[in-house]
Image (cartoon, rainbow, N blue to C red; front, side, top):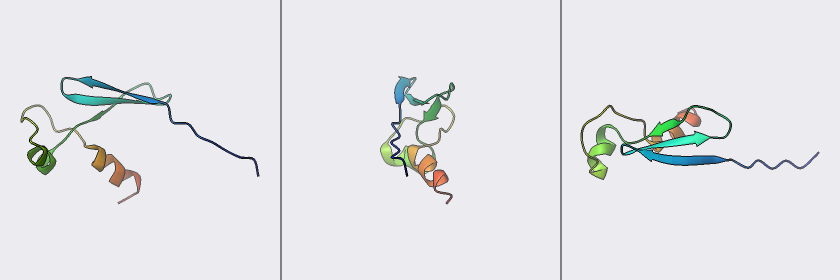
Length: 64
């Protein structure tokens, strides 16, 4: 079997307190932030719409 290596190319841009991840060849960024109890736990300022946290994306990615 041929050897396979995947290199994830992405970048993060901080805009208005929200991290926007540009992931590989996907043209639209994925916003990351905090919501609900995470917002309170990390002491993030209130206001603005809730934004999914990296933890939310990880849990969704593994199907749980």
